[in-house]
Image (cartoon, rainbow, N blue to C red; front, side):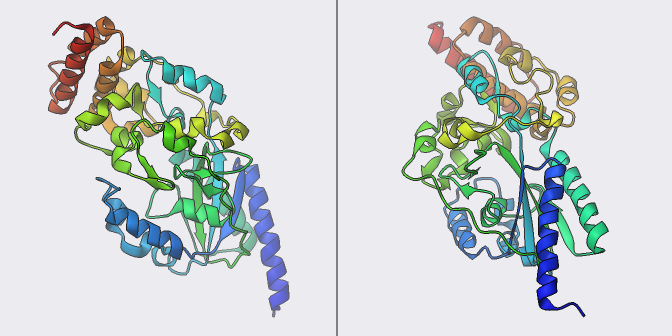
Length: 361
């Protein structure tokens, strides 16, 4: 019979091996935590009670399963959290795109292949290696795909701390990375939680175009550009449209200004390289895509989830914010009789905004 001391030694060696395998599979870091999320559960309940989740009803749909991993995966004792860098180009190249109102800004995580697929495949390979070593064991894999509080778990696993913008930050890697998790019944040794290093910095709060970071560590999703351009299904609120600028899918402003991202490294993953010139495309050319072209160009991409109508909705707003009235009006007129009222209403708004700017009312 294996003694407790020998078992502890075995599990510690297994944990080290899992982290090594993770690095070999392209993850930059792996850490292990227990399933205690009591503090995060309280924060989640307050956030939901304030209505900050907007139309994301799934955030409250599963009750305590989100904050109590053992309810989501019976028998779970540990969570292996992993991170993978995704920044496809040096950070210095991002601001010029954001500053050019004729070009479309797409959050850099969405420029390449859908990260859900990339990480899920690698996590499965990691599981195969663990299974070969220990035999069958209880597990379940997650990549932003179920009621999981991935950032509190990652913080408990030592992968970084949750910054004032609510993204995870690593002292030596910034915040341009994806997270994935393996819930397991293996009683692996846990890592030390990461400590907060935001200090007195409030750069992310000040830079947010819509004021969505309503307090340090508190995000009102209803104001967040990522929510407005991706999660929101209906019309974008009128008062927020001018604040979106040329951001048509997500927003990276809080990451661009974070001082810890001076340590961020560009990804070496070919899957995260920008596809189809989306890193520098103009609003007009993207607005001209018919649905068939949208589906073809976004095949295998996270962008496809919003569908063609919301794609046009978002770009119409950006065209309304563009200073080149002639080019914008020309592109907008081509969609003025679109079959969707959602699209038509945003086009009308954009054309009216352009007319006011050019004094042609």
